[in-house]
Length: 233
Image 1: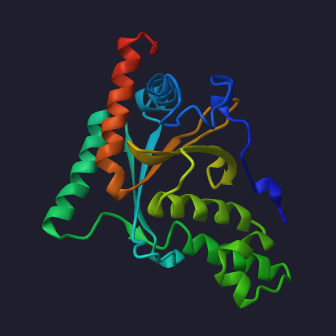
Image 2 (image 1 turned 45 degrees about the vertical axis):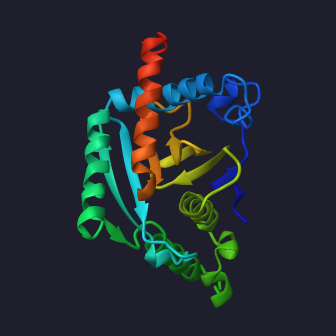
């Protein structure tokens, strides 16, 4: 099993800021609001200012469904909070008018899953239906562990998660990424960042379409507070 593709609960960049990052965002944590401001400033401020921030909005899974082919998404490069607000407004209008959401289905999980299985079979590996159809078994073939890792990320963003924060590392088509998951009362979202020693690369914010408005409000509040407190250079 290729564990180098992904690893959960690893030390990330927030471990350099907080002694206990896994409890820093608990509702009972002292200075929780300060922790949020510092974390979002560190993860988002520079990529947003440098137009290296991508917003990935997912939708399509509902009523417990988690079929890879049904997961749809749209991606948007954003260089300001106004750009993020424009994406949120586009989805809001689609909801109000009963229109289809932006984006397409299948390309996040179904297409790369099919490609990974086909590549494994070309190398002589036999992939049975249970392995093919059960995400728990995807790590049995190359690139399957990274697909399974993101499957779990998308599932938690869609259906919820009890832990307020977790971090993992996962290989993606764009290179290795630190995956910071936030499941907060203010909103649920993921920030996937290049490693600290990477000289370039986009940062990706992933969230379910239902979380656009609350996460936008949280981002605005935290980045404004960071500037007010002199945390942004």
